[in-house]
Length: 211
Image 1 (spheres, rainbow, N blue to C red):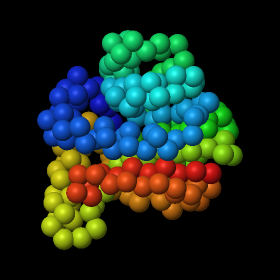
Image 2: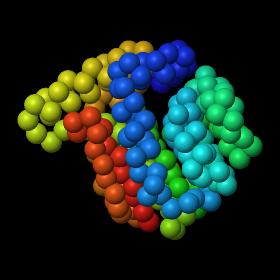
Image 3: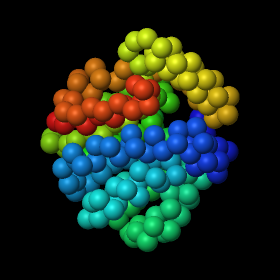
Image 4: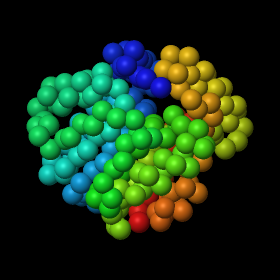
């Protein structure tokens, strides 16, 4: 899986297809986040969420794990354009499935539109691996796609999700082909869901989990 070829075009593609909804979904629960000391972000992409996080929590030490070197360059450039110091942001170019995070270090975990990139068997390994980096009182901010619960919205969301998987599997060699409910894995890791919001007629959701 590689987003390097897609990375230079991701900004306009997101703007054209989602009209700001993805970013609203990423950031909607930031007001509910207790100020973190150390943050671990997986799959940040081109830095849209990271920029808002740095503005809201300027004292936080942030680690970003990103598999695309091009996305890392774009995120660094976005921080610079925003006039935000990147000295407290550590970018790690690595595969999330194999990178070993330091144990019990981060009091905020962030996975925005990231976990949907993995198969169920991969998530059985990945979610506990990420959770091992969380402190005993950590928060987990999650944003992702979902299938709307009923009616025409459900049909539309199924079509959109199927199209997105077909596109990303072809362009990025994505292994996943369907959404997986990660709630049981987060619960098993000791987290409890505290807040939840939905967007785009139920296609998008964000949640805050707490240990």
